Length: 365
Ligand code: BGC
Ligand code: ZN
Image (cartoon, rainbow, N blue to C red; front, side):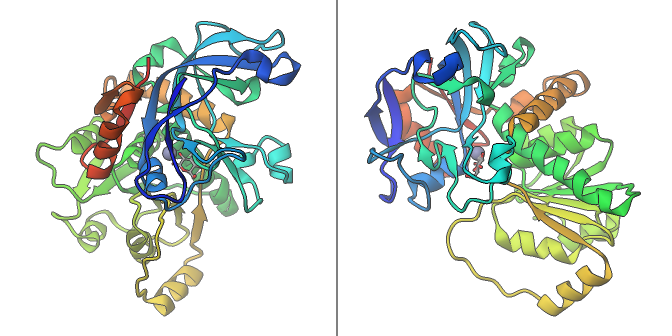
């Protein structure tokens, strides 16, 4: 089988690799699910792995197959598989269990191992190939009615976990009635988080750099009933003057500078979630005494959120179903750039590097 791979540690090493076709019997106890790969989404993580900022090959290989946003169709199942059947549309989680207590209770997204295993990212091959086999436990059924949103359940799962974390942490207050939420960043995580928060009845302001006019991101944000704020048109301070301090901020820009700036505007008892993965070694100056003081006197909370387990995929899919009824046709606008076939890996990388595409995905079959 063909696969799109990189040589970890070597910048710009994307190439076509060869893999053997897997079979259901590769998974023990009759729990294998053989999946024909239909589409795979790519994101900034793939770009940064190709830039050699992180990512490691599986033991015994000198390459890593990319791709962690799978949309496929079940081709064959082992005799003990119950969750899915041939013909079902599916996706798979990204992280695989390590050795900690969290991994053992199905919450590998909270692993406390320093080394984590993620398909297409670290130590395990990804989905940018023709077939994959997976244990039933990591396979999630996508309803036929969502097939037009194909690769989005994985990024949606990360948004769903971030939102879940907000409400879990805020149970500390016994009563929390959030009104204003800011989502910083309008990439796929920012947009899907906007959707999830709008579904929960918040007044959402989604902040981005680009101006409103002729802007697909602004169109999507408005489609969810949220406000699109271009930081070129309105400063953070001006926005706060208009809305009051936000009760909640979900940070998804990919910029640590924005992550720290937002610490200066959160309301008392507020919560901020950081979701950006910021490679490199950028350093900035922050008004640390001021922030420290305000965070203590305001009982504010900051939580980092990464990855997702199968429950977050299910929650995300459930939100997507609801969203298709309440905001029909909005979410599919995220899927802007299709690349035809694994052979066109160069085009895939160029689109990712250009930074101009909202969402790039490869049509594998
Ligand atoms: C993926 C997550 C993963 C994270 C860190 C993200 O792009 O969507 O599943 O945990 O990168 O590797
Ligand atoms: Zn990702």
